[in-house]
Image 1 (cartoon, rainbow, N blue to C red):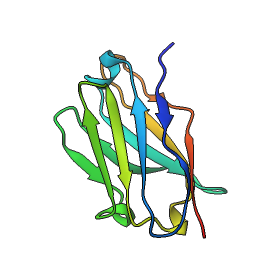
Image 2 (image 1 turned 60 degrees about the vertical axis):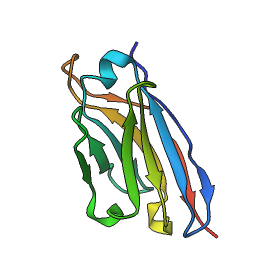
Image 3 (image 1 turned 120 degrees about the vertical axis):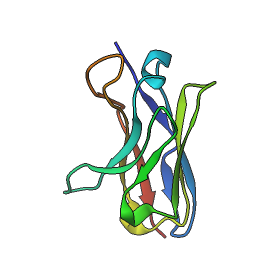
Image 4 (image 1 turned 60 degrees about the horizontal axis):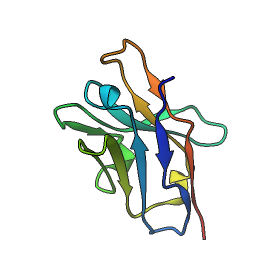
Length: 117
């Protein structure tokens, strides 16, 4: 069973930083567009950022300049560095691997990020 394992969520004050990590099986990591999505209470899941196998990145407008997605090929890990966090960033953050070697999406179980004073 394919697993994406997220870590790094927690409680942080407004203006603070967190780094999320997602470890994927190598065959998934090297053939899929990897991304982070989030779902706030009562809202639909939304795209936060993606990174292609070639390293091209894409961001939701409201996180541009604050969040950075990156990948470490030696660790099969994708990161989401989140700076200048705002209360509206509070959500469960999910790691996603798009279709690649396997013609399907894979999701992690999610990690909760709470931004509050």
